[in-house]
Length: 372
Image 1 (cartoon, one colour):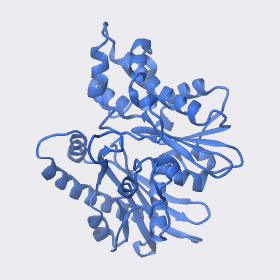
Image 2 (cartoon, one colour):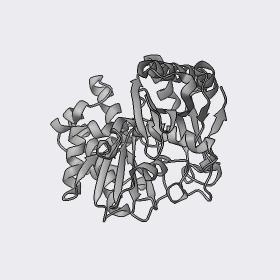
Image 3 (cartoon, rainbow, N blue to C red):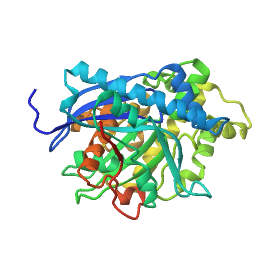
Image 4 (cartoon, rainbow, N blue to C red):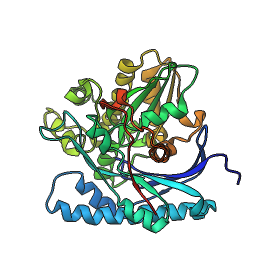
């Protein structure tokens, strides 16, 4: 295999909590994906991580255990990926590990000090793999007065800029949009729920981890009164910069809105309405952020939800909706590749944040470096 640039591994464990996405990328003028694999969480770890997203008893002990277990799982994932693609660890410059966000309290969300917390012990990753590991990317942006999220828009600009104004839509557990004007600037923010509410609702009612192809949502009917109540939440009207997470949008949040309704709604109709909430959150954000955008490309797991994509296409008509696969990276690997790129930025002493997105006062080098 001929290598023109440096090899990096990117690890992403997002708000969907469906596992560890691991990619090996060659970073030169444009990232080249060498290999990618998703490693599902063991059930006990996924449950522990979900529980840590909300306040509870004995949090420090439980966090310490989950931090270590996730770090071990991430290290094992890297080794398995490298074995799969036949690449020796000594040829990999570094690993960029996002970690698992268990609490995100950005500016404006708390009366105390803003903070964000990602776990997934990077010391264990470096020890197991023998590869320099860069982690803890978000806290420096918080320290600089930013939201600490979203961080992927800076990567979007680096790899997806084109000759026409583009919008990149990332649909993970939480959704975010990035505007890429032709002048090289970048804007973006979290739009609200992506998959997280739909995943939680179908898991509760049907025991399935996600709504495959959006079939269950497609079987239901959108409930306008419920949708209006959900969209009336203050987050959607709040100005950017803004970011959010499971701490804010969770099933208890949904249940409060359901409790205010006069009539009971079938679970399938709730699912249809949640899909529409995600679609409306995204399209309303695009209307505000980039109404003149000529090209819209989707990444993240939501790109494979056929019902959700159909709703986005209908709401965005006549603009064309596509996948980031059309411009270089398959939707499921974009975020992991972003953290490989952020690791490269850190080792080069270059900024990884984008103040126009996060609201930080300064450009900052993001991430702490853990030598092998």
